[in-house]
Structures are given as structure tokens and as C-alpha cells.
Length: 164
Length: 362
Image (cartoon, rainbow over all chains, first blue to last red; front, side, top):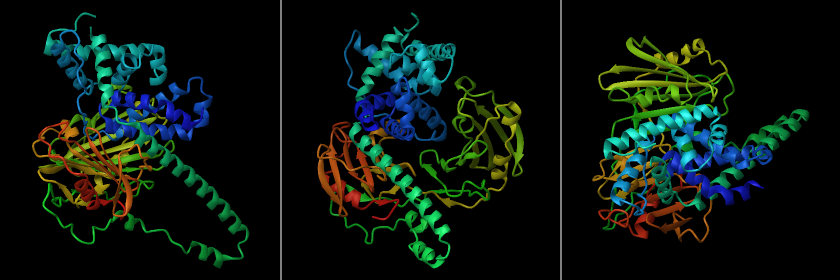
């Protein structure tokens, strides 16, 4: 697969992943652009990898982690809120998810990345560990700590979330 | 329960993902530019080798070098429009000329770092920051030096952005004196990144706190290694209390009435309605970037416009967006997103773009 073909096929998914990591579309564009240029520089290596997509996702995740340090000052700029989908008790559920989205920004970057990889990308812990460059146990502890933080928030605002 | 809510939350937020066409175009442009740079570098190397071999023709060499590049200063000092924009009655007003300075300047920097590569100024909390990044740092090199000033004690995010649970080592915290003031030194390493951080923070005088942050590439992840911070201390000690103008990627000289500057610097300029007090609602603001990395856009991206003779595209989704590849990128919320926003016409968008001062002359 050439770089151009990969770009055409995978860019939308990578941008969505970056939005979940950064929380705003502007920063997502920045880190995807940076990551894709890094991938372009080592494209032959990416092509030879067993899972090129995982390779690129690892680059993107690393760019996000270092971006949170090097460019940590850019304000988080949320975009227009997504239209809400009425499911169950829509009002309570909507408020809950809005609160979670806000609290996600307060997580440590690696915790947030781990949560996004598991709950958005639906990856198994072993793959998450490979992308984050750490042990599976570390992934689990990162996610566990992140969920604990989110649960605390939810229980404070809604009195739910202790059922796991 | 929380698993299901998280999954649902992420799915709902997919709608805020930006369109990929402009981004793909920017990536292609920058990739092509990189290829060109490499080809030129090879060519220059080859030519230099030939010239060295044929050393008997130094005058030819001098002639070849005669075409000097544009001095860097010219590129930075974008000249303002030759005449001030004439304003027909409408929703645009001249932007107030806000001085964007950092109150200190570096008196010494490591040799590999010369010109600022990054700057930001936030109007809300008075933060000013200038960063110097090495082009391609190797192990043992300083990757970046960042100098930040704030009017009040700096937040944790500035002096200690990494938590040990976040892949960072334990933090070595020391109290010491810098420039005759009590200061806090934090050092830590990021083994998975191969980097070492040092931040120094102190109150220079009432209303002026300074943070110096140094990032080094290193293989030495020991605690002793982490405790070293000689470069940061030297940068701090040799700071000069002389204000320095911060670079801006773009400067808007016409803005919608009722908007004020919130953030500017090398990344973007953000103007918000005065009614938007919280920067978290930045999606209601006007954003301007320099468009240097924008590639050409096809007919699917709105309508064609001309800005100072340069071709651009303007489109309206919920947001209105004007892109002039190589010059600028404006994006602004519309009344469809927030009813209190006064929409700009296409002509107003173009007029605002024409009055902008990008980082290189039009």
C-alpha cells in the first residue's frame, strides 16, 4: 500500500481517533498532520510492518503524548456539541456523557489514550500495550485508574456508575 | 454501565471530527515539500562536491552563490497593508493593535538553539511563552528551551506537566536560589521518550513569575542524571529583563464587531465574542492560521474566491471557512451554531482576509 493509498483509506479514522485523544478538532488535525509526516518519512518501514495501521497509530499516539507536553498551552477548544441520541433516560444519560467528556480532558494523557483505545477503538489490552509501548498490566492499571476517576465524577453528579 | 456510556459518548463525538479533505491536502503539500528539500539538499551536496573538485574556478562559485536568499528578517517582518482598509458600513471593525510581548529575553541559550520557533500569548491570564526547538536533536542534545511568564504563581501544568503514573520517573524537587530569588527546580525523565525535563520557577518580582523549561534527549535515566539542570539554571540566571515581541503566525487587522483577542502566537490567532467569557467555548470564536501548509483545494470545497489576487476557497457548513493556500485560513462560527453570532457575508470574509497580515508578505 502506498502512502497515498493509505492516506485516502485511513485518514478519516485517524482523525476521529485523534479527536477522541485531544478533545478538539484543531489539535486533532495538528497531531494527525504531524504523525502522518513522520509516517511518511519512514514509510518503507511502515509498509514492512506486520500491522501498518497499528504502526501509524503508535506514531500518532506518541505525537499526542509529546504534544501534551511540548504544546501544552493551547487551550482545549471544544467544537459544536454532537447532536444527542435519545436512549433510555435521555436527559440523565446526556448529562452523564457530557460530564464524562469534560472529565476525560483531566485524565493523564496515557490514561486517556488507553481509555480511547479500549472503548473507542475496541482494541484488546495486548494491542493497546503495543501501541502505548508498555506492559499489559500497565494498560490495565491505567484504565482502572481512569475509570475510577470518571466514576467518582459520575457518582458526584449523578449518583450512578458504581456497578462495575 | 460506564463502559456503555463511554462507548456511546465516543460515538456521539465522532461528529466533531473535522473534514479530512483540507488536512489530506496539507499533508500531501508538506510531504511534497519535504521531498523537494531532500532533492535540493542532494543537489547542493553534489554541486558542492563538484565545485570542490574543480576548485580552480572560485569566481564561478561566488557568482553561483550571488543569488542570496531572502534575509530571514524580511520573512518575519510582514509589512502591513499599504493603505488602511476603508471600511464600508458593516459588521467589521479595525482590530485594536495589541502589543504581544514577553517581558524577558534570553541572554544565553545552548548553541543549537537560535531563533524562537514557538510563541503564544494568552490575553485571559496574561501568559506569555517563547520556545526554542532544535531542528534534529541527537542524544545528548537539548531538544528545546521554553521561557514562560505569568502574572501569578504558575499552574502545575507549567512546572510539572507529567505525573509519575503517566510514564514519567519520580520527580526530583529542590528548592534553590535563582537570580537571588527562592526558586523551585523540578527534574524528571520520560524513559519511553528518552527525554529529561527540568523546570525552574520563581517570582522575579510581584506580578512576574518566570518558568524556564529545558528538554534534553538522553539515555541517562538515573535519578542523578535527572537531578542535573545546569542548562536550565544558566538560561535562568542569564535572562534579561527586556521585553521581546512574540512572533505571530498571522495578525488580523479587521475583525467582527464585538470580538476581542484571546490567544495569539505562532500557532493561531483566536478572537472571541466578548460575550464568550470561557475559553472552553472557543468553538464560538474566530480562528486564523497562516495557511502555509494548506494545499490547493478542489471544487468540492465551497466556492472560489480571490484574496489579494490569490486563489482561495470559501465554504459554509455549520462554520464558515476561508482558505487561501500559502497565506491564511480563517474559520468562524455562524448563527446556525449559536444564535447570538452575527453572520459575516462572503464579501466580509474576503475583506477580513485581505486585511490580515500573514507571517510572510502577501
